Each structure stands twice: as structure tokens, then as C-alpha cells.
Image (cartoon, rainbow over all chains, first blue to last red; front, top):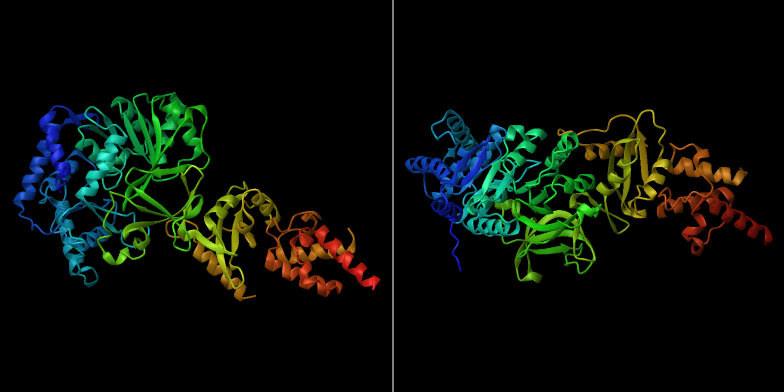
Length: 512
Length: 87
């Protein structure tokens, strides 16, 4: 049995430096950086951390855009046995400061050294945030102790402050070993890194690769939407493993259509983060003639939990409903029905999961209620409630049905307003749609759809019902449909504001 | 279009889909599958039929098929009135 320690990745990296100092560790802006050179960068960051004499029992904050220096800084923090919070650099300074204060960081590090201007300005913000009464209480250490915590990542935080997710050394170690074995990452393997440095995806792209002696071809964050740049990066560096959100594949498909370029060096193509459209999926074998194709499903809290390999894509075997997959070895998946029992066989329910990689809970322990639940009927194992509703099919594969937040009960049947919206949206004359559940004494809830049609279209509710009849079940059919031509109310992020639509409906009902 | 059918259509459209022209509603359009009339809407339809045509609707007859289309509703109304005359 190998002992895992908080220095696992740093130890492995040191081994790789010894074993193959001249091998490429990183490819950045067309230049290779060897393991020995990366160690040099990490050593100088390590001396800075050591000379700062930071308190042992407190984490540090790292504010860094993706660069070799940033990776060196993380390696140095791992070597120093420091837990570190690595938030997105895109966050507003106030948000960053609040997060750093919540984590109780002793210092905010940046690749340009603790004495740099950007680090100084951040320190001032952290001090300010700490002084403010609402954030003065640090949540560090987390429940279960901070001694074995390494990376602290954050959730995307669509509402409120992003949640801090402390990952243990053992969890990271188990994940990086699984990923290396699954995608054949070893000395000589080139792995592209598309995601920003603070994303959990980097645990595969960057940290699995450096631990196992491969080479990371780093995508410059500022050019992540330039198809030609990305295509060059994959081919010039002979990338073998590619993991990215569907957008990257869309960009490469466009390049392929333009100049016919293919990417024969890639052996493993992984889509993640979002459902890849079947139309994109169908084109992947043309782009990557020598690759195997996978979808992986996971989140920051649990890391990857499900994997699906697409077989026979080249023969046109393209699923319309993309399977999220089957549990990764060691992962325990549970589909929870409404009555709280585990679903046996086929059906739908909320996806709950335990993984060997998962966090012990959010740093702010009050957030754990209802998200991390211990199940007595399962030996007291703590599961993460994903909030995703999944369907289990005959062959055991799971497909995503939608977010639990969008599910309502209509006459005792669980209905997703997202599914209904999607069906309505498919009508060519529909610009946008909001489906809301209106509380109803008898039915529990009835569905109402407010639909904005093209101004010159003649679409009426009867035609829309005919359109939906082949797409929706009876219980999914809206009871009332209102067709409008004005834009629907929007949220600050530009999405249709269902709450505002519901409020408007309520007002118009109240007025008779 | 006979008078009964016209009355039924006018009621359905006014009550359940005011944005739709009456002539767009076919006699054999499936109101239940289309979600125009749900089980609660069905009660409204029955109450209106009893009132408008002065017929009694037995609860046991409240199967969905009797009211699935405008044509079915008309047939039901015709039959109920014939029954009344025969008494």
C-alpha cells in the first residue's frame, strides 16, 4: 500500500525531474519547457514562500492567470505543504477578497512574487474584507480538518459568492491515477490544456500529466476562441489527449470545414461540461481519425464520476440523447426517487454520487446541508446531491433529463419545465419561451407557457399544441399558452426571467 | 356547420384558446391529447353543456372519449337530447 501525503503531486513531479530532466513538461507559446526548467521556476517560487515565513496552519491564496510561472507557483505551494485557494482571475476584486477572507488565507501569492504590485493591491483588499463584519469570520479550517487539504477550487457561483471546495491530497491522488490509466497519460504523452487554471478540469489536463511525466500543451486563455490557433496548437504539438467543453470541438469543426484539416495525433477525445450537440459529435471521427471518444460527467465537488465511450461514431452510430455514462471504477452512483429510496432498474430520479475523489464538503459548512447527505440505508456513506435529474436505461446507462430545480409535479407526475421549453423552442416561429408552474389546488401545479413568436408569423396556441403533441407527453402539455410578440423579461445575465414572467401572469390574473 | 357544432367550438375557443380563430378548430381535433382541455377543463365543458343544452351528464359517463373532439361532444349532446325526447 502506498501512503498518500499532502505532497503527492509535488513528490511525483520531483521523481519525474530526476528520471527525465530534459523531457518536455510544458509547451507554451510554441516553446518547450523541460522538467528541469519547470523545477527551476518552482524552486524560486518555493524559496519565496519559505522566506515569507507564512504561518503553518493557514492556507494561501493564489491569484494567477495560466502561465508556466503560475504552474510553478502551484507546484511550490504543494511542495511547501500549503493548502491554497485558486479562484478564477475573472472574478471582481471584491468577490476575490471575500473568498480569500473566508478561506482565512495568510497571504495572496501571484506568479510575479509576493512583493509585486498586483499582490500588494490584493492584500489590501483582503485586509479590507477581513475588517468588514460580514466576512470577518474565516471558515478555515474546514470540517474534518485542513491538514490534508491541497487544492481549494470554487464552484462557478451563478448566484452569490462562489462556494469554496477543499480537495484532499488523497482525493487528488486517486483522481490523477485514474485519469492517467484511463487516457494512457505517461512519459511522452502530450495532453492539451484548454480550461483556465482554476477549473477542476486541470486536475486531468495539467496535474495528471505532470505527475505521470507527460507534457502539457497549454492554450493561451486570451486566444481560446480562435479556431485556427487551436488547430495549430493541436497539430504543431502533436497532442494525444484532448479534453474540453463542446465549444472547442465546434471551433475545430469550423476549421476542418474551411481547410479540411484533421488531427491524426489525437488518441483520446473527451467532451465534458455540457451536452455536445449530436451534429457536432457526428463530425468528430472525421476530425480525429485515430481517436476514441468519451463523454465525462462530474463537478468540482466530486470530480469526474461518470464516463461514456462513444462506440461506432464513424459508422454513424450517433446517439440523439447523449449518455452521461456509467460510474467510473470506485464511484457509487445512486438514482434517488421522490420518496428517498434508491431507484432499482429503469426510471428517473435525482443523481446522487459518492466518488473516491470528492471533497468532504464546502469550506463554509452551513452550505453543506441538503447537498452532502449521509444515507443510513447505505452504511452511512456521504453522497453528493447533484441537482441533476437522470434517466436510467435498460443497459444501465444514464442520460441527463434536466436540473432538479426545473421539476414540478403535475397531477402527480414529475415534469421538467426545461423539457417543455425545449419542445416549444423547436418551433421555427418561436423566438423565446418561458414555461412556469402555476400552483393549482387540484393538480398541484399546472403549466403555463408564455411564448414570443416572430412578429410576422401567424403562430397561435392551437398550432403550437399540434407542434408539441408529437414531442411532449400529455402531462407535459401546458394548460395555458400565451403568445406574445414583445421580448420576454430578462435577468442580468440575459436569460429569460421566469420569475418575472410568473409575476406578470399573477398580476394579470389578479386583475381579472 | 350546424348550430350545435358552432356553439361548442365558440365555447372551446373562448374558454381555452382565445387567440385562435374558430375556423381553425377542426371537428376531429383531439382536444385532450393536444392539452387544450385537461381533466379540470373537462369539468368546465360538462358544466357548460348541462347549462347550455339543458342535458344531464351522468358522472359515470365522464369518460374522456366522449369529449375528446368537437365531433364527439356534439354526438354526445345529440344523443342526450334524443334520450330526453324519448321519455
